[in-house]
Image 1 (cartoon, rainbow, N blue to C red):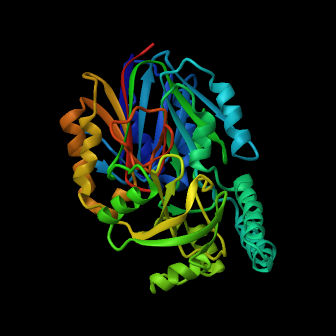
Image 2 (image 1 turned 90 degrees about the horizontal axis):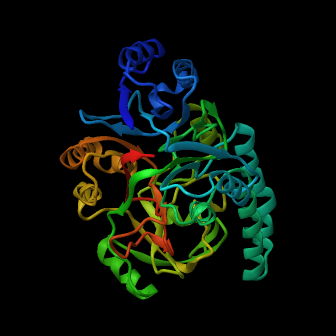
Length: 449
């Protein structure tokens, strides 16, 4: 097996190609490319992918956009990085469908069995065209919310939320825990459930074998001597709802218990208010974004998708918790990136803050098992917003423990079937972990069959 990391910090197409040409004389012919692009090369990304296809026409390929990457030298927020592998034990599969169940069942059939680790890449929320986003707003205001306001009972409200949730799932959202639930088998899975820090139309962008697949899912499968690790920086969960509430109250500041009306992936009310009204009542600076403003930000690739103000839901199955950022979007119902039906109707509202800071992310590397391995790690991109230039410390953590590595900063990785070293707060279903902040993951590769 041969593995090489190549990156370029350049952003203009000509400079990118010249730099890559100088670095891609590898001394071997890779049969797999794993490509991570940053927003800085957005305008030329199709040309860059076609260049790589011409350069390695016989190699399989997977790729996506990330917020940044870390090499042995530095952490970068521009250019692109890639892993080039010559080995038999790696393959790429992809699928598309009308909804989560169809897409991931198709993908699971294609993947089959016998793999030792899988990286699953999919959009948690896919921002389609201007017309599609307008359609969400129109449906929200004219169709679903009018029905919701006329509902006489809680059951009637939940029925409307279920309809709205089904609409979201059919076109925009792959609920992360539902996708993992479908894909889960005996193989450890790292989920790259993509959600850019700032969104534009047609994002997230995912590639399979040099083609942009739009709203779909890609599985990168490994077979051989590999080890898969999942980690979160949060405290351990409790053994009951009340225990987990107390643990989170002691860890996060100003925690408030609230009542939530929810169904599927849709939130209708928080403490009797529309979610956007509730958020404004708590944070005066968070005025609702007008629809035209939201559309203009999407046109420019500047629609913010992260928030320091969150709801933390507690699982009925494990008493773990998953965190959802609240944003002042111009809709009456707030969408969720995960299936809410497994959670209690009481939730925790607070402003997110990690007590122990960036040093807790070092624990991912302390769990390494292999020497002389190549390591790909994924760190929650919220670290960029929280710690700024201090994220370079993560590169230092990696250098201390890893012989060769590439790290990427991407949206809060999830996991299925990965052995845990604690009662992870983010384990919201048995062997399924997800939260909207504070997670990281790693695959150690010593050899591929």
